[in-house]
Image 1 (cartoon, rainbow, N blue to C red):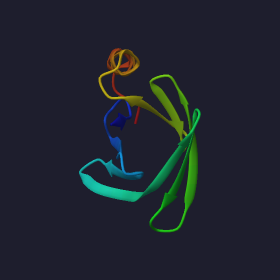
Image 2 (image 1 turned 90 degrees about the horizontal axis):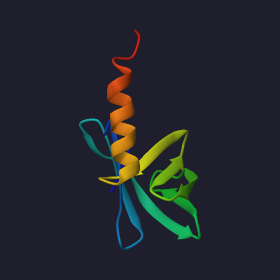
Image 3 (image 1 turned 90 degrees about the vertical axis):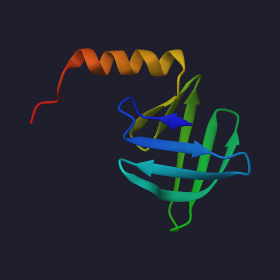
Image 4 (image 1 turned 60 degrees about the vertical axis):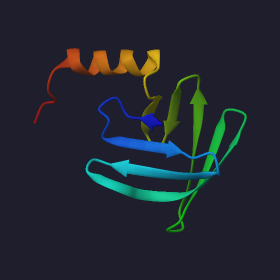
Length: 90
């Protein structure tokens, strides 16, 4: 499972080459297939759009977001940094 630091976006990369992305309370907001080659990931969403990303250890750069392998040291650091920053300005 790959998650944003705030857990708002959660992306499950399934072993059968499919992904399921939840956003907030909306489960399966995006679904489709994916393929990993080296440190690159390519997505083909069921709705027709394509996207890509890059792995850097336990961090996934995708769509302008940083995703973290859930529970990894990188995820724990990102969560701690987010919590210490306090609430976002309105």
